[in-house]
Amino acid sequence: MNVFSFSRIEMFACPARWHRHYVLKLSEPPTGSLVLGKVCHSVIQMAALTQRLDEEFFRQAADVISANAPLKVDPDEVFNLTYQPLVLEEISAGGRVEDHLTCPVNEEPFSPQIQAYIDLWRPEVDYISLVDWKTGYKMYSPEDTMQLKLYSWLLSRNTGTNRVRARLVFLRHRQVEEEMIGPSGMKMARDWAEEKINEIIERLIRIERGEPHQEVFPAVPGDTCRTCGWAYECIDGVLPPVPGEIKTMRQAEQLAAEILRLEAALEQMKALLKGYVKTAGPVVVGSRQFCETTSVSWDFSKEALKAAVGYIAKKGDSIYDHITLSSKKLKKLGWSDAFIASLGAEKKVTKKFTHVAVKNPGGR
Image (cartoon, rainbow, N blue to C red; front, side):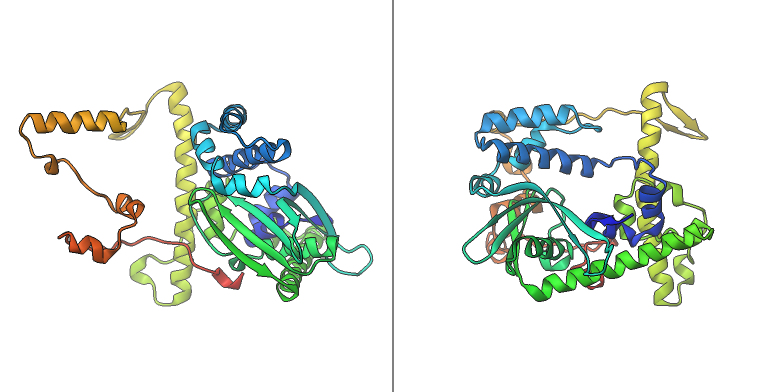
């Protein structure tokens, strides 16, 4: 194994997952978010290569590519994510699309290679513009990950330009995060990649010597479990101390990591059982039955909503008894807390136990 990409290195955060994927070459069950991301990238790639920026092209591309995805993908969601001003502005400016770049990680003979497929890049006057499309819900800065720094290093080695404007385009949020990356950031990424690659190679040598792969490539529960298609295969029933027994930060971290793995495993197991129930019917376990249920909701267009409000008023009921403004709707309106309070609304704050994204985790 002599060629490494950012994703290949990043997956090593859980050695067991890395071993399954790259050594045993097992097919990892695709996740919905991963499939959606690939479909959106394909639609944008087609539009960029053909320079088709019209709505009809994006709708047709979304329909065709979604229909051929390994998991069910909503073509309307794909269209809404891809056909937007940020995307049209970037691809209309031209550049290299899905460009494959490689470079030795160091100057040694037979050095491992770093490779990347870059979504879009183009030369500017005194720097290179690099664009990476993101379809997830989480937003972050280019400086919070080594990905774009490593891509910038590759571009620098292949073009001779030592300044890269790296842009993360978050399609779901319709926002951009960018960073100007220079030689120091590029070197940081190269050093990080070389260190991880050397560790991977050392472990592969240990496998060749006959050491048990479970010891050389152990499962490491944590954030990576949330996107791993094998999370449920790692559940062994051996859990860290229950909350009442936690005495150290290390024990708390172990329990938190196991929760992330269990959450991911639960979703995968539900998906497996759902497929069986859909084919064979309900599954009864004691007093509980796993089955498909039906829920009904109504989507009101502006015209339908206007008609409904008119009917409520006609009956003499108060419209305000049926109208609510959720936090999501208020955020969309762009109203500040001060303005909302000036309208006479009362602010309520609730707390819940959960986990959220951390900026720049572990300094990556």
